[in-house]
Length: 224
Image 1 (cartoon, rainbow, N blue to C red):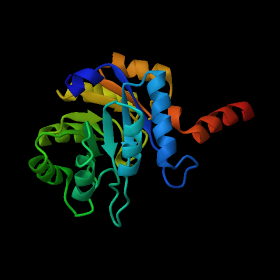
Image 2: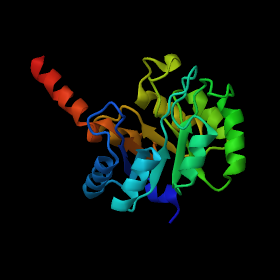
Image 3: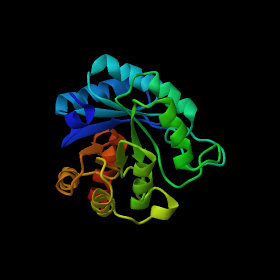
């Protein structure tokens, strides 16, 4: 079945833990993915080759692969260079996601110039553009991506204060490629609303897979 058709109207769970988090371990992320699968997830988003390889041993689900890496003098950290794209392509990802914001990449190029090289090298690979504004989604579609996502809404300086669901609604109206709702989809109600607004699929991460943040929500509510 076509990957995009398979994910239409479905829940994708982001299983990630950065190196300063308690659950940072590929084995743990593989079990997190298994738990997500048992809960009904239809896809997984994962960070790093090691995590992806471990997750593949536990679940047979489409994976949106990313590699988060910080480069000096660049605000782009989600699959920022061709090296990360190459590594993910080597793992046979259903989808490779990469930062499509207007921030400058490590090599100094804008997203459109970078993606032109990526698409030329991997013409048959599905790519998802992680965006922070509607304008970035429009530019990403013009560049030839297969999916745009609201992943970085509120996380860039130029999108600070923007509401993900509002951006999602505008994005769905502005582009013709599938739009994945991602970023601050932290309640079941928001996830359901995203699909009502026209999202092709919903990606949920921290609200499911980061127990320290979930615990902190309860703690704050109790203390208030």
